Amino acid sequence: MQITNNNEKLTIRDQSFDWGKRTYIMGVLNVTPDSFSDGGKFNTLESATAQAQKMVENGADIIDIGGQSTRPGAPEIPLEMELNRVIPLIETLRSSENICAKVPISIDTTRAAVAQAAIAAGADIINDISGAIFDPQMLPTAAKLGVPIVLMHIRGTPQTMQSLTDYQDLIGEIYQFLESRITAAIAAGIDKSKIIIDPGIGFAKTSDQNLEILRQLPKFTTLGCPLLVGASRKSFIGNILNQPDPQQRVWGTAAACTIAIANFANIIRVHDIKEMREVSQVADAICRF
Image 1 (cartoon, one colour):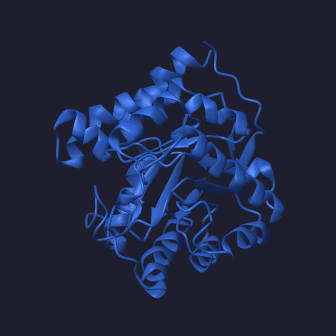
Image 2 (cartoon, helix red, strand yellow):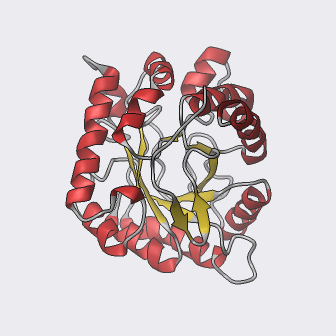
């Protein structure tokens, strides 16, 4: 089946995102000591810079930088700590001699102040796992800055979300949440062409619910926004494979990404860039003709 897409083309830092033509790769770069998969690996400026450069060399279309872990149970850190983790890295990557200088950067944050500082430092996209619910200033800030925003579905907070998985209508409730956030974003002054949606794999979802979301992804395309899916290395894959080590879930991630692409995902958010780039190239050759 040919994948079609009526969304407008989006240009970010001279990079064209032509939705439906191919899958775009968002590389995960957590500059934290406690993220579920790579916490502590890239929490120095030198190691994070090197990882960003490797991601770009391996084919990342976007680098997604986060300074606040959102794994289940992760504690909220002070604002200044989050700023100190992400802003120097963004500034370094934007230096003219860096291979990442022209690659779009997204800031993974739920705080409008962090988003504003990150965009000022050179980031291009806001990626808000709360759907811009946690901070009421996020949508007005994104509108004022004129940048794209990713709105994700979640219930509760990272501290409480895994106790909030009781849905009467899983897909319907996620759909309604995303629809309401799109409406709120447009009301705040954000152009719909700059809104990306994410059903929130792993956020207030059981393993079985994550599988159902992947099966039912086509239903979200009627919202008329590009679809981002972040299944990389997550616990539902570990449960299927009986693999407790997130870094050993590469092939399970590949299977999840293939299904996401076949079911109309426009962006996959992943840790293993080279491997998932190859996965997406083959899946695109099959699905997007």
